[in-house]
Image (cartoon, rainbow, N blue to C red):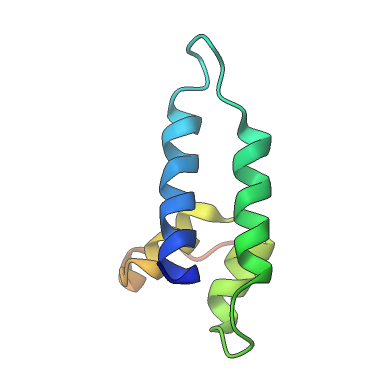
Amino acid sequence: MTTGAELLQALRDFETAVAAVNEEPKPDLMAHFSRIDELTVQLPSDTDGELLHYLHKKSYEKARLFLEGRHAEIQKGGCLR
């Protein structure tokens, strides 16, 4: 599996964990943050700057939409990128 595919799966897993945050036992969100950060640093040097921006700002939903090719659905944020 490529780093991009692993990253997409990690982002999906994170969203699933966030959805279960009010359930017992509570999911370990820090493990998800760590995994996403680990995969982010493994991305190739020619990775699209927009994707890197989303990942560095922890805009994980936007990063997932970007990786899924759903660019038109990405809401612009306050930083005007």
